[in-house]
Length: 322
Image 1: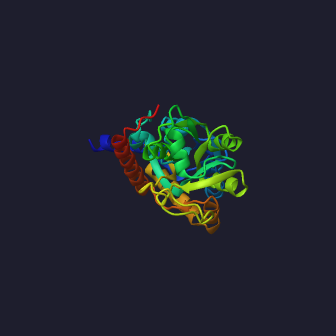
Image 2: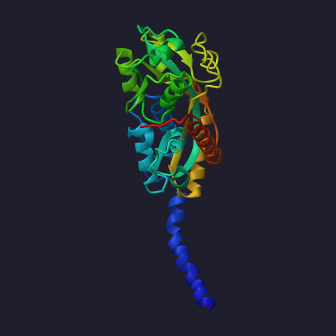
């Protein structure tokens, strides 16, 4: 009987050995870091910043691949179906939780994803073309209240913080004529905004501020709780009378569920080391973002809180997404 038990233990050890070896030597090949939007936006820029630094630390290439569509969900859905071996990651944002509240996810993030680390957060910026007749939030709200009005606002996709900022403004301002126009990334949306094809956008700070500074767009308000250092004369929506209005984009790295704990821990630790680098913190601040730290537990807790927040809002407001 002892011999049988010994043989069984040896068989089990042999079966498990390759997995342990792969974990111990991880990574042994290139890692793909997917971005759910077109190149150019904050998610893409953060992904490329961290990919470069992680390549240096891990000794294997970390390659950014853009898979735009469905407000970032195309990339996350692909991740949820990927092998949980640590070689497929996504630079995501709180749209994962927002879309869960809106019942738009074809995946269950708690079941299908493994949160790894928080990266940064940033509010959005309400901007209009430089020659727009809209000068204030009241101008926009009143235009959207006119019979048959169609005041268009763009976003990088359904369920993004840029989109939800617009939807919340529409509800708060009781301006039903505001109409969402989704794109596959922030850059194509901004191109149309500058050209006047769409009327306004609650744009990504990292790309909207330079367009304001260059005179191509005009800033009207900030969606966060504080004014921006880069645009100190632009008030928050809260200051302008929309009390409690606070929408921010929060960025994070996630992996497929069942990714081995040692790999999750290694990635989390390496990302934390990258986040502590002064030059990385400066790069994040240059994107007008706030650097964040937090491992798997903190990232998961944030997503749970964010989903609960938006679920409550959806129920209270009756917000429906086509």
